[in-house]
Length: 110
Ligand code: FES
Image 1 (cartoon, protein in one colour):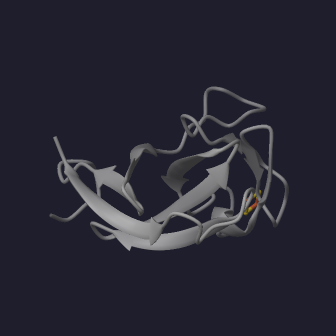
Image 2 (cartoon, protein in one colour):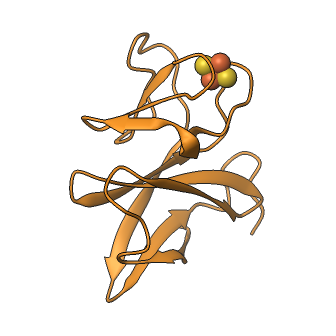
């Protein structure tokens, strides 16, 4: 099932903004976009840039280093669907934005 963890407060991230959090031993990028919150792996699989610093438009983040583009809803590389990074469930509980990390996922620690 996984555990919900608070990653920021509602209003902390402006529309189109992202931040990096560490959950379960993983770096996760949390974004506020299109009126909702999304979470995907923060580390770009190309050369390791932090995706939370990328440009966000139309539900897609563009890596700040070499412009690989990932869908925020599911982590799929927008230009080559065979490549995908992990995405995470996000919910808002009151003023808290929470991400669920499954401890059984690869690399995750309880
Ligand atoms: S490090 Fe992300 S595209 Fe190169």
